[in-house]
Image 1 (cartoon, one colour):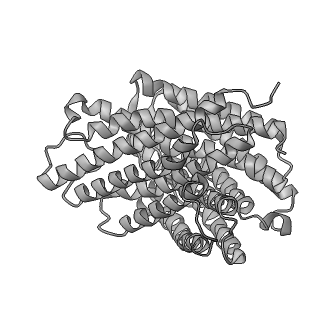
Image 2 (spheres, rainbow, N blue to C red):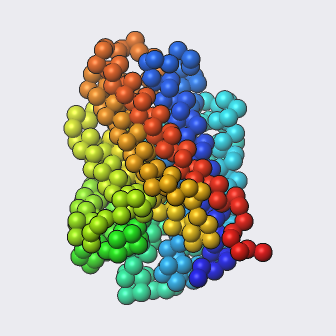
Image 3 (cartoon, rainbow, N blue to C red):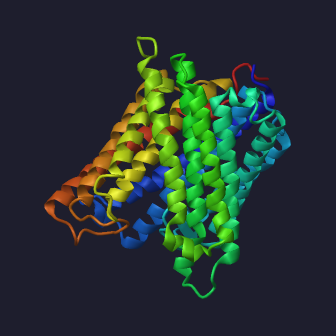
Length: 449
């Protein structure tokens, strides 16, 4: 039985994560249509940049870190870690308040957007205040989980026996190190550097380190989903633990290099990029193949109609295709977002697949079992359309983060229209997910007084 306190925390973090997807989906629709040749004249450049910044902020930052909050609560319950409920509620409250504040400039069309890689910024007081509150709230929850895991003996049999428990411990460390990197970068910024460049330098390291949290969360979901859906586990679990532990030196180094180099220097020398993608590449590829091996050896028939299975499997596919796109013709055009939509989509699909299980632990069920069965496929097909369309267009000169089509040739226009069609399907899949999982959260738990 799940304790009532754990259920309430899960509902809070899940509700906040789903709300962030609503905001992200709305602005994704605006940004995608503004880059679709058939309808782009309905928008202007300022609207496109603000919509794109808001979409990435809520889809790539708020959604991921708030769902990680739910994962920390779940992993602590599953491993019987003594999670501090008071600290968790403080973290959730700060994150919820911050998320609401960050949405103010997005919906009022105010503030100046800066399309930084990894963490775009809207230069507006409410956005900055909200960003600090979200970061603080998630850090409090991460610290509460890490402390609970350490008290239970992280590194001992009880902790390392659970892949998801160790993975979320690594993720908690990554979240805290990302906040440290942001703080060190802010303290060491050169005041003589132009403001826009300073913002890029400020978020560069912390934004990279958060990728460790997202990958750790995805791996933990793969492990739980496969264990529940097909009663299988990653092969060579000792190797899995070694790969997860191998991420720790990279995480620590990516934060502590700010004690040696200034943020502007780290933006130029790409040391953080090497630490991040070197570490994630060395660990991520083997973990992907081990997940595929677990599916290949699972007992037949496979439950293709269960989101607990289809979510991770489509996630595997997005991770593979997105990774390949990062190696093929990877230059600064729309092939860059084609690549990272695959990687981000892999994490999102894993999280979507686990949500019905978390919902049931809260005493609720998806609004429609039929919707839950086909939603991961609809979202995955739409995402694939976005990726293929952007990669195709990028190969024919389509620039990143650019409004208008004065650069375009016929091949690029075909690719961008394919991206638009894929966006419609992905938005539909996201909307189905939010409604199917969100509406039950608004109702009282079955049997509750």
